[in-house]
Length: 183
Image (cartoon, rainbow, N blue to C red):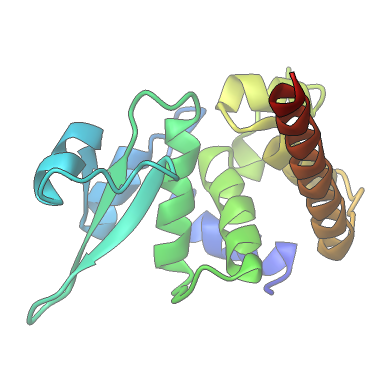
């Protein structure tokens, strides 16, 4: 996984032309020649199926002599801007899989693209402010905030916490289902 400094350097290449906060993902898509389409267009393009059922955005590579890319996104998602930047991050970082490492990298890069470190307003006092004003999901805003303020938590620890929460959620679902069946 690239370091925060490496991701920051890459992000600055793409965000130097941005003048507003939070940054506009469509400007970067246009610059990178990535098309973007909303959910209804995804359903049309995928012959009636919705590729956005389990995720708010996808980066789709069209085959041909010159590959072209489309980001399909769910415009009703609360954090649609973040998810478009997440897909752009996969593109600019040259990701080829959905590995945990590449997902973590894309999440952090999305934060750097939507809210560049050198363009953050001084009125942002904490991760919650960042989440609200930049429309970044709170978990990613907290991780980014910690990197910005050198409170770096090892990704492995975060992953272990996320796995523990998922396991507890499954256990609670099973117990709830068992209680429903017993009644």
